[in-house]
Amino acid sequence: MHLPSISAFIAACLSFTSLAHADLTIFYPDEKSAVFSIKAPEGWEFEAGTEEDPYCTLSKDDTVLSFCTVEGDEDSLEEAMEGTYEYVRETYPKAELPTPEKTTIDGKVAVAAAGNGKDTEGTLTQFGFAWVFVGEDKIAELWFEVPESDKDLLEEAAEILKSFKAR
Image (cartoon, rainbow, N blue to C red; front, side, top):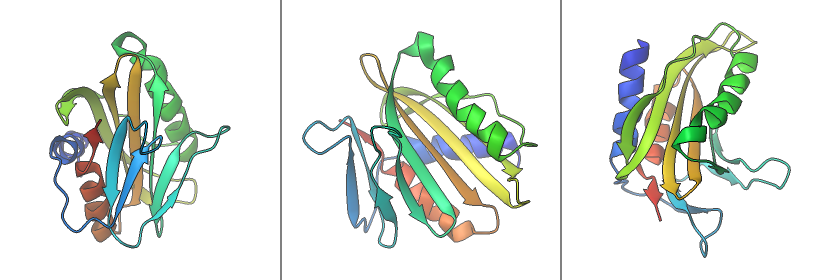
């Protein structure tokens, strides 16, 4: 898959907000003070973030979706993206880092990018990122990693991303 088509795929996934047969709704950081929510189908495991690592994860087999909010605005977005890209450079040493593109997700201004690369064990993996401006000085950061060989999990990850709702 070429990078522009992957970026378009991510933006398209996040542009729509319907999800049928969702079994688990996750509110971030919690239901009472939610900044956003996502829905996951049966079989995905949720792990809440911690004070040391604020990223929450949804996982199934070798697929991982991570999300959290970071402080910032459009002017400080570069800093938020750099942290994610640093992880990609460590995990996928030969991956080409895509240039994020502006889009809208659930009616909010956002930036999204996607790509692929081999991890340190040689597994070809699709990855995608989105940063959504969900409030004054708050950015929702979402990203996923899916083995290229598992198209079904890529579709499930896309369904989870489609469910994104800013609160």
